Image 1: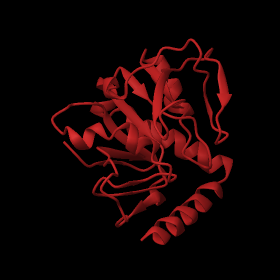
Image 2: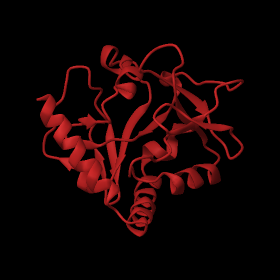
Image 3: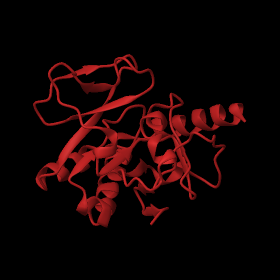
Image 4: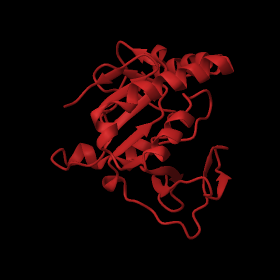
Length: 198
């Protein structure tokens, strides 16, 4: 089972990285068009997203749209004390940034306020693969699963909607999932929105 996850992760990451800059731009613009009219996006005021890495679908058009609509954006930051957890800090054009241990840009923590994961309205998450039943395969570190594990324990707790962002080719018929994998509420791709929960 673990080898299946590793093989699938490697294959999809390779395909993602093989996209041209033009294909990535087109996909990012299409994703933004698909997501901008969705009710969850329209209603959300506090939105966490990511800066793309390793061929992930680009969030630049979404960032620009959110800013034009007056939405507050947050980026994940590796938790400095609790291993494999994320903090979410406000993100704007003048936010000081640094590269973390994975070489991913994140806000500098010093003096930055944080928003608890449960207090976000919408989380736009990166992923390697997804399935129609809400399965999400990330890079393998478990950061998002640990940060949103409260959604597994307290289903009555509203918490944020979790939407994966992906290229449509990242969709899989099934994924080898573990009990600790936090399911998505939906997935937005360059071709459509997959709504998984109500």
